Length: 143
Image 1 (tube, helix red, strand yellow):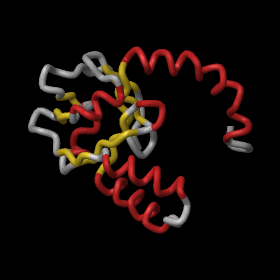
Image 2 (tube, rainbow, N blue to C red):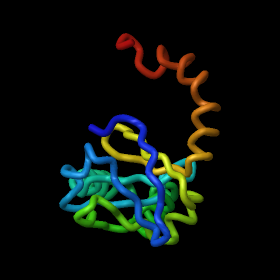
Image 3 (cartoon, one colour):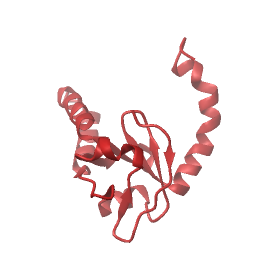
């Protein structure tokens, strides 16, 4: 499970340090791809395989499934962190997420998300009140 908020920076070569607490779990490899709201999703290989299997069983006759799968897989990049725990984020993915220097890496349960720092601040400021108001509808009987 991935938790927390981290503030790494991209270097001039498009590399980013993974949060230290997750480096061991991701040391064997990971997959980066486009996510919703213009962030990047970072999946451990096993989780990416689980999602791949779920999309494999989705009906290809559904246009939304085809469209989503095309973008999701075409933009995916498998990466292996270097000995210092850095990953290289391909230029196309950096462009999609607007990543230039200051980034935010958030834990999102089964994945990490990489955001441009300013985009994350804007998103969070817009969503915090909605989060406070929706807990009952999203998790009835739990919280």
